[in-house]
Amino acid sequence: MIATATITPTYYLTLAAALFTIGAVGLLVRRNTLVMFMCIELMLNAANLTFVSFAKALNDISGQVIVFFTLVVAAAEVAVGLAIIVAIFRRRQDVTADDLNVLEG
Amino acid sequence: MDALIFYVCAVAILVGALGVVLARNPVHSALFLLMTLVSVAVLFVQLDAALVAAIQVVVYASAIVVLFVFVITLLGVDKNESFEETSLFQRPVAIALGALMFFQVVLLAGHHWVTGAHQARGSLSVPRTGNVQTLARSLFTDFVWPFEITAVLLVIAVVGGVALARRSGQRPSDREGSAP
Image (tube, rainbow over all chains, first blue to last red; front, top):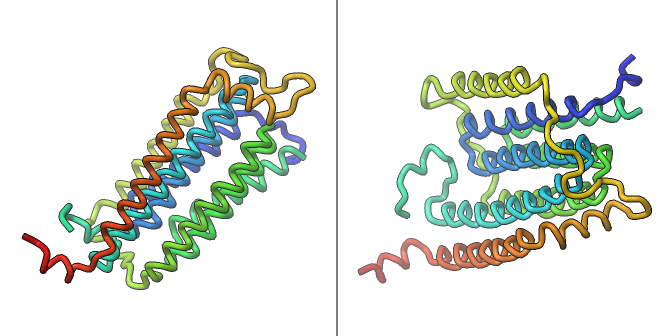
């Protein structure tokens, strides 16, 4: 019976690995820069889930503290990255990664 | 009950993640991302991380997804993103590499996932203190130096965002005249 099985940390870590894999594959196969950013968020979330699982498994608070720093990095990354995307869009009217093959504006 | 919650959330997380990757419309991707983030927050509650779950909902599911939707509104939905792959091998190779990575993690590390010292920096459940108090005590004692560094990082991100938004405000036609 599913509802009575015990959930060990292995379950959470496997789920986090699957989430990270989907994010990584999505980052490689998509061309829309916004969706690529969302895939990066998926990978960061997988890392957060891993940290919190280890905090629970090892009964250690520092795993949860690290998640704060990951969140700060994610917020900074999204703020700067979306500003870059908007800047590119104003210049070129297109945010497809295939077309962004030169660094000059 | 724990198992039921876990399986429901796991299915929601994986469906949301696949939806982010597979949805053609970026708005749908953002909504699938929201589903994944909220489900991860539920799992955080399951893992005795109440404060982290709350912050996940407030910061990720509100701030970051709203920022994404704002930018999609600003740019307009890109209808003509072609799903035709330009390079022949990219998609199969990406999927193969992803599968390889997943099975490496699961098969090679699967026998001994959890290693390391228990309670290296303080227990998760101190008697008569809640999750918030325990976390704050650790954050402001053991991790105060990384905490200060995040302040610098956030300032840099804000200044960088403002600088990017301002400098790109001029049109390409304006630049033609002023370029040396």
